[in-house]
Each structure stands twice: as structure tokens, then as C-alpha cells.
Amino acid sequence: MTPYDQIFENNRRWAEEQLRADPEYFHRLSREQRPDFLYIGCSDSRVPANQIMGLAPGDVFVHRNVGNLVNNVDLNVMSVIFYGVRHLDVKHIIVCGHYGCGGVQAAMQPKDLGILNPWLRNIRDVYRMYKAELNAITDEAKRYDRLVELNVIEQSINIIKTAAVQKSYLKRGYPIVHSWVFDMNTGTLKDLKLDFKKTLETIQEVYDLTGESNQQEWPPDPLPRSK
Ligand code: ZN
Image (cartoon, rainbow, N blue to C red; front, top):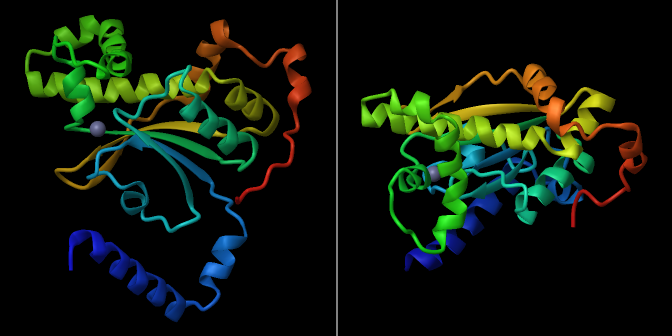
């Protein structure tokens, strides 16, 4: 059996096992999704969202891209955040980076990387913002690790800049944005303890999108939670 065909065999067995344990499993799963968590992580094959969080299908809404970036003109990630907050009512949004990230490492190199340039520039911008702190770290591996962390924090801040998150938090007290790093050497998640409330207040000095004229869009139109 080829590795490709093996996938369908794996799938058949998995579906059978689920049904054996719970005959109503897929019936319930297909009705709707109501995850409490939105996870934005790296596409790296070694960082599977559900597995590292110990969560089952239906528990976490997931978006992944190279370098776990939240770029304000990326319609993809912005749609995921909007849908997650306004229609799925997620309570927590997590940005999860990982040590040893190829995207972050590539961004640290002074090289023309073709079509990757505009994407990785988001990470190079993070380096520029924290240049003094990063350049003070003489150990290159430690500097790389720190850029992974700072990138996660800056992407979390980008989420806090969105109207969807600011308005929802003002009205309902959620979602809370978290910054995590996965260490694949130990399999553990590290919470960088982003102070969400304080960060939101600081952000709103410049990026406040919750004023009177912005309130008419609430509450959201009812959109289906499943396709
Ligand atoms: Zn990565």
C-alpha cells in the first residue's frame, strides 16, 4: 500500500473506531461546531494543533500559515478571526509559534527569498521593532528563540487591533488573546503570559475601533456554524 492509499485506510479505521465508541459521534459532529478556542499557528507539520492541545474535533477552530502570521491585509486570516469571534463566539484566541520555526529562521537571513519576501517581511518588521533587544543577545540560538517569541506577541497584538475582537470584548468580556510557543524538543507548550487587558488598553490609544459610530454592526447576522 502506498503512503497515499494508507491515508484512506487510516481514515476508514478511525471512522470505525469512533462509531464503535459512540454510534452517535458523527451525527453529533455534523450538526454544528461551537469551539471555545481559535488557534492560529504555523503550518509546520510537527505542530498539529489538536494533538498538542489534547482537543477533539469540534473543540478548536484552526488557522495555520508559515510563521503563524496575522497580517491585516491577509483576507484569509482576517476572515477566520471575524468568523471565529462574530459567529462561533470563541472565548479564547491563541497565537502559537514554535522554536525551530523555518519561517522565522528564513526571515533572519539577509537574503532575497523570492515570493516569500513579502510574507517574511512581517517577521523582519518584528526584528526591526525589537532590534536593540535582539542584537543584545550574543548567542544566535537564543536570539532566534527570542524572535520566535516576539513574533508571536506581535501577531497577538495584530489580533487585538481588529474591530471584531475589540467590540466583542467591550460587549461580552471575551475573547481573550493568548501568546504561546510550542517546544518540540520537550513537547510542551509555553504560555508567554500576554497581559491581554493592558495590551488592549495600550493598543486602543491608537487603534480604538469601538466608538459610537462603529456599534451598528452588532449583533452579528446569524450565519450557519456548519456548512
Ligand atoms: Zn514554523
